[in-house]
Image 1 (tube, rainbow, N blue to C red):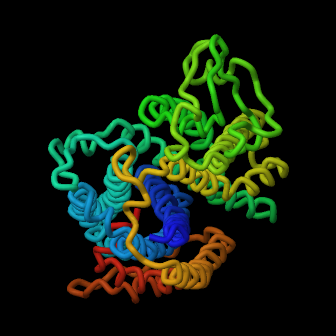
Image 2 (cartoon, helix red, strand yellow; image 1 turned 180 degrees about the horizontal axis):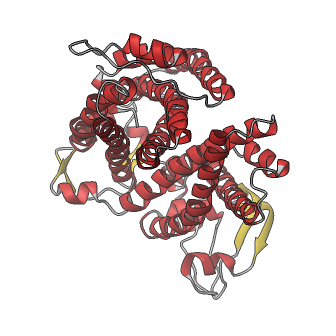
Length: 485
């Protein structure tokens, strides 16, 4: 295996998953947001909640469709570029993805049509139930996918027989040591990314003079969620870091840029710097003494494993891990700052009349998605050089392709992805720019008539029809939906 082909295969997987992870993250957050909006509408009959529901369901539909399409590539790549990994660990990863199909896929495929097209064709209770089931399906999908990925990070409940992984305890496989932390961390990140997108959308409209009731309501709801979950994410991240210290110490040492321990010395917190892999030191480092020990060991003089404690071939590429983690944490602090500013403005009665707050919220719109990508890079690059931590090396997992084949497919992916998903993103931004409008109830469906996706969307909202027709067809492809999240 040519090392250049290995590197290209890793880049290709990183590129495709970086595109894919954005859409399920938005889908997870928007599905729950839609359930909340419909619940508030049924309880209060305030038309603002109904208008917001029909505004955001169009955006949800397009994101769901792009998540399904991008998931196709993820499913096939395991067989094309990582065939030795599939042969070695398929007895664990295969069933976990099958469980996703048996649970999340059936929920989403069964109730999504009712959610999208059944507003005036089924009772309000059944429609609300369908929305809840779709939201639950997105969360269950994330659960199974993260169980699979967490097992690769902290494998448990298996034996190796004849060169293959054999699961011996499925509860240990699923509830492996890092799974609870990673699941909670990812779900909160999806909620935060969605709240930031919603608040940025409202801020954009308010900066242009649109202070209608739906715009103000979605801004208030979004920043309220940010106030609640951004600090919570910091506590979950700290617990996740301690779990990483216990089970993946080399990754944690790379995150901290910690090269060596000296007798009796504490671990400083390296705020900034450039890790030099050859010199095994940090260039231009800015450090805070003792703070690394305090955060990681909860003492002023505790020590953690250092990078020099591990063989050179067992260390991840430190600069990427070091800086992607700081991007994630830095954006996290900005999210907390946005929440506090919004809470202070609300207390002063200036939540809807503070242009500076609105500009900050608009600038923070993509911050949640960028933080998710940065956290994903930290997790995946930090696991290297292992594809299954301390069990199988990445170099042993890749298919025996040459660099030209992998490079050509990578180039094709880049071109196609930017065209297809670039167009989808532009369309979503156009939908957001129109803003929520008063929803006009379509006429009741005559008894005995069939549910038509085309007729429903043409009556309720023309833009939704464009997105929904290919989406409904994509739902029949369960191999795509298997990797949707």
